[in-house]
Length: 327
Ligand SMILES: NC(=O)c1ccc[n+]([C@@H]2O[C@H](COP(=O)([O-])OP(=O)(O)OC[C@H]3O[C@@H](n4cnc5c(N)ncnc54)[C@H](OP(=O)(O)O)[C@@H]3O)[C@@H](O)[C@H]2O)c1
Image 1 (spheres, rainbow, N blue to C red):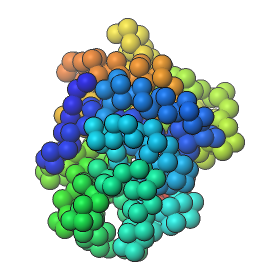
Image 2 (image 1 turned 135 degrees about the vertical axis):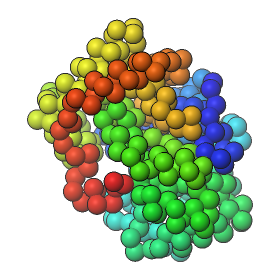
Image 3 (image 1 turned 120 degrees about the horizontal axis):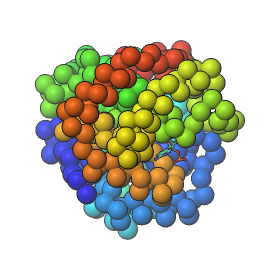
Image 4 (image 1 turned 60 degrees about the vertical axis):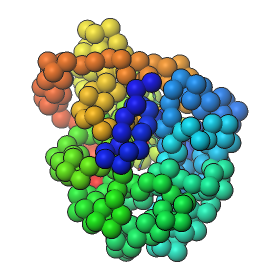
């Protein structure tokens, strides 16, 4: 397994991590627990050492799942989790008050069956709590031995700088893929300057870039993608052009859409470790092949050139969530 360092922190992770959200939350009902335990343990056997969860995935179910599944090799892996929603529930709004963070971590430690969180992210910047207070609370938790590394998610450049001045930030986790490249503009230079690693979430465009979803796909009624403008059936129809183009480049190289999307992501910076999510072992295996797919400078230029000609239809979040997402 290839290993990457997240920025200057010294935190080493498998170059591809595993996004665990969809096992319990977001994309329809929670999957069978024993099957997910098998998947998580297989991921470790295949070399994945970087597992991503959050207290709000479920809420709480996903952390409990990881706590049980990863226990046999807990000291060999990096577990990343997140705080920052009221009572741990993303439907209830933000809460990064220090007293909530302190409560939150106790719950996460218990559910994750561990005495330290390797990477603890603020899930979204809370406009009601100065980021310095959040960073100061994490600094205390690091001193107390409950957290090893501090992370932010979907934070803007100014928040990153302010937080980093109080407690060095190890990683930023934000959406980044062939159909959401905004972080390249302001975020990447900031991370590079400060020596912070980057963990792209939804690197497969929440599944859309893989070509396994089209305008006729029916999501479960509880699937979060039903609420995303970019996934509205009309938008999917338009955005199909993008997936077709990716498909052409993938088939020319004898690989799959998912593999080219991940290889492209990995090729952008050496301090990037994407966390594609899947609930299926055969897809996990397919995704891992991306690590051996080296895109040349010409390949990358061709992809950039081709995708720059296609406009993506639909914003990535509905308006109320767009407000708290990174720009
Ligand atoms: N910080 C944040 O705010 C935030 C937000 C969203 C996500 N995340 C994290 O990032 C992780 C990954 O993001 P994501 O799950 O939203 O999106 P993603 O990784 O872009 O895509 C996941 C979707 O793609 C499908 N998939 C995976 N591999 C595939 C393949 N080879 N072929 C076809 N389909 C494939 C999965 O379905 P199957 O399960 O059926 O394979 C799933 O529906 C999450 O699990 C979560 O840990 C963080």
